[in-house]
Image (cartoon, rainbow, N blue to C red):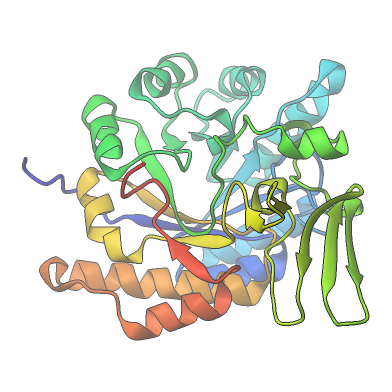
Length: 340
């Protein structure tokens, strides 16, 4: 099969949970930055994270002056009459001049398209759209320009999507790996009673407790449910149910659902580009600006290296060194991209 070649270079989309991280992402080589308001309208609604309208205005101005874009996520699911808050978020994002809105809910998509016919809409990964019939449905009815794919597809499946839709394709490249189809996970809701899909936070920090013992170890609990017990030298990712270490019937402690590992696609960038993707996304709006800067810089170097000479592309040792130091967990994975 002839390899697909995009007429334009793949875009790097970096996370920003605050103004400092946004500036760091832009300065480190991001083509676009994705953000959200400081409320439940976005899927990273952690305490102390995200932007006021005033802060976003500053961030958009900073990015624009440097020729970069800002995408605003309004990608959670309103309940009953709370939809007005989501409508306001759409209106504010448009007034601020966002380059695109990242939306998941059908009602919010309908509002955004009807009120702003020319609005650039990206379908959020929270919508869990992972086949071309679904993607083309959103294209027909809501005029989406791009889909952010769930982290459940192989490279070959992405190539099939490209052959059957003209919607731009954005995929996750670096950072945390969600093994559950985004927008459809209820583990955190089951344990805490607070829905990830409506509150915008998996394992909200108000439910998390870290308790140390006399030996220097640590117990991590979510709403009273113990997710892990760590020895003095052990580390753990942010405590979510899927990355908890549980006790088997034989007494063995093991990661029942997912090891604490991070997604890293550097070695398959040529394959993803040949499959027809349009953007590579870095997970981590809840992470530090140093993480944002390091991961954006690594991905920038990798893409620039590929475009200089695609046939000679290889992962440089210094890139791997940066990701190992910065990622959560101790392992890297290709997730489902290489097979499932």
